[in-house]
Image (cartoon, rainbow, N blue to C red; front, side):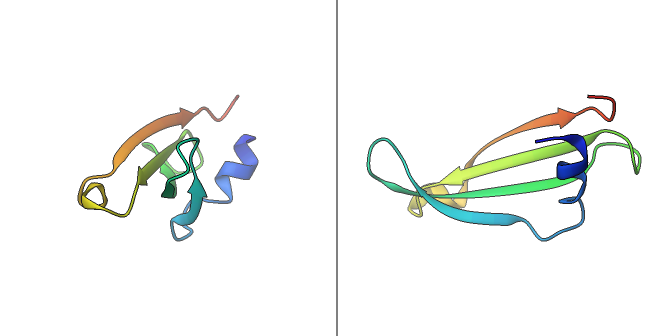
Length: 70
């Protein structure tokens, strides 16, 4: 996604959707975007995934930073 597309996600409620993995299990994926340090600069995007079971209490998460000039 481009910077401007991700910027439109900042301040919005986390986006969630259900997906089916290669293992045919259902997973919930949540994506959250927010300013990393200053408004209108770099954006941190955090993605979390769980299978609805015990992992929902501590989902696997990872993040990236989208640079303003990228």
